[in-house]
Length: 224
Image (tube, rainbow, N blue to C red):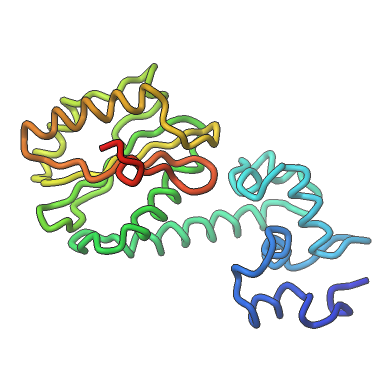
């Protein structure tokens, strides 16, 4: 049965308009993005099939072009559209924490850090530099690779904070495995960074670990 024959309150587009995007399932959201299904399948059927194939919406959205184009019902045009949507989302979030804005909305910074770091297949350690009024100076990716193998060097972060005249920092790094609980290495490097930066009167406000689901906050869990 085509979606146009479904009851109005079950059609993804009408449901979004009446109840909001958050009321839709992953399959319904993906169906709106796809717009149409394929022969014998509605857009919702195709969306469910794709989610089963990839395992999750995140995995589908992070797929490279070759992998994406191999899937039935997808292709170059939809890959380009998806990349544009993802980039617009990142830029929208970034506008909420532009340079000079006070960090009065921690949730906005958390969403921005998720959008920047979650998709990487390797670990990235980043820093949000703030002035003494907690206004944003700059966001930078500092190191790439696992914390154990690449190493996060406190002297480099202290040097960069001094260059930017930062009075406070927020750290963030991702766990490609999806687990957001801190490892012993995460705890150890955070302690070292706090000690090194405190010598320069630079405060560490938080350290987020980005995995699947909600980020882990060192501050909220009493680890700072």
